[in-house]
Amino acid sequence: MEEVGLVILPAPGIGHLISTVELAKRLVKQKPFSITILMMRFPVPGTDAYIKSVAASGLDIRFVDLPSIQFPPFEESQGPETFVSLFIERHKPLVKDAITSISASTKTRFVALIIDLFSTTMIDVATELGIPTYLYFTSCAELLALMLYLPTLHTQIPCEFHEYQGEVEIPGLRPLPPNVMPTPLMNKKTDGYAWFVHHGRRFRETQGIIINTFSELEPTALEAVTDGRCLPDHATPPIYPVGLLIALGENSQSKSTGLIEWLDKQPRASVVFLCFGSMGTFSPPQVKEIAQGLEKSGERFLWSLRCRASEKLSMPVDADLDQVLPDGFLDRTKGRGLVWPSWVPQAAILAHPAVGGFVSHCGWNSVLESLWFGVPILAWPLYAEQRLNAFQLVKDFGLAVEMKLDFDGHGLVSAEELERGVRCLMEDSEEGMKMRKTVEEKGEVSRNSLKDGGSSFASLERLADILIHGSAFPH
Ligand code: UDP
Image 1 (tube, rainbow, N blue to C red):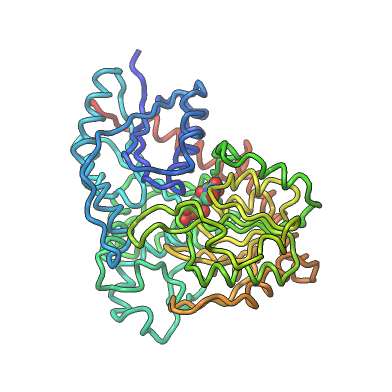
Image 2: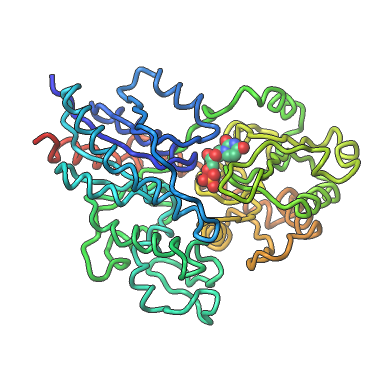
């Protein structure tokens, strides 16, 4: 019998890959789709065990490795967004061949190609094959609003954002200080900026935009996007908020043995957890400031500390603790602190009752995980759109404590500032209690939205219905 298939092409990066696979899991449970996930060959630490578990789950989801390609050159000055966009673009003929041959060999009619926000060049492939393209946007609705509006913003604010005196006005968003704009937008002369505008402009060519948020979390941004205010001169594709989609602890790695056992011995909500996403690292002087701040705060802590091997686009590597931490730090904090020099199972840690606060870089998946598990954040954004996420967390959601950062990137966050932030996060102040209550309430709403009758469930149902009745390849 002919299968109804979806092809999904996740971007290579844990923050994109895992939530995209979670979307596939949801869709295949909703309707009898046969799902093919095309994997570009790029090392994505922390995902192997998870992918294996999904592949062995019995769901109709198959992972297909695309052939290797020659990597584009990485130039630090052009930013990771340029690298990833070029890397994905080079896969165009491979994606076309894969869809054609899988369709022929498995008798699958593909009804959609689901792409990532960095993969809009693949719209050309889908158009050639006559398959509708859907975008899966793995970040927040605020960023989606901003990216849809970017071509307009580009003409409204021709100067660099750091030279701009006013606030940046984007439909559906509270006026933004220019320094919270995503990093690739902070230098308009770079290819990273041009790619961001390019992707934002092409979103309108898709048949629908699926997004990992839920309508109760970002109502005004979602409304502005849905009613077309962010795309004044063009029809906006239908928007499907289906979040929050996270993997609940399945991405743990065997190397973390001993860590959860350590948490088991700590009192309830007593530990502050520090973790900075797949790419977050700090300079040696900044590591020392963090250590001093933690020591002075007197709080219990669990710190995932990794370092960068070189300035190139290399993944962080395990830290040599004796080399990077201040002399005697580990002895002085023994018993109340644990520094873990490598990757940690973040979701399992946030789910642990001993964890009471999270010092986070505010990557969108980390934000969603903290919300799901009811852990408030001390916001320390580092790269990509994290400043925007942090701003929203503090000002709109009331889910995070703000930290004073040097947004020009030259200075350090002092030990005193970190100590202040950690105390504010962990102590039972009026502000802290209010934040904790808000996190718990929003977490419950997020879980309900995915249940039958919830907003994200309804959105997913609508999407699955449209997909299954859509046009197909081969015709
Ligand atoms: N993560 C993890 N262990 C680590 C670092 C990160 O499990 O040591 C996971 C984290 O739980 C999240 C993802 O990696 O699901 C990071 O995604 P996010 O969007 O927060 O940040 P990004 O890495 O994309 O900057």
